[in-house]
Image (cartoon, rainbow, N blue to C red; front, side):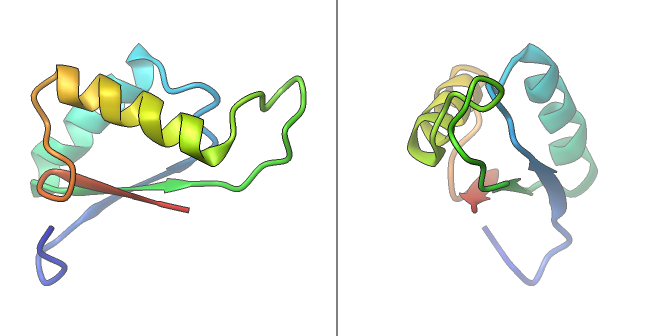
Length: 78
């Protein structure tokens, strides 16, 4: 990622990351060429069953399957 360039932000719980989030990501990356995905910290419960590491893996797997590269097209922070 080039932090001197415009960057789209996506903030959410992403519990879990799903196809709708991937489509939103595609629109976001098309606007600026790079996206920072910001994960909200959540308490594990029935509405938020995944911890941060599980969500990072879900996102990375989905975006890799679409041909996007971590640290080039996107980065994930909490």
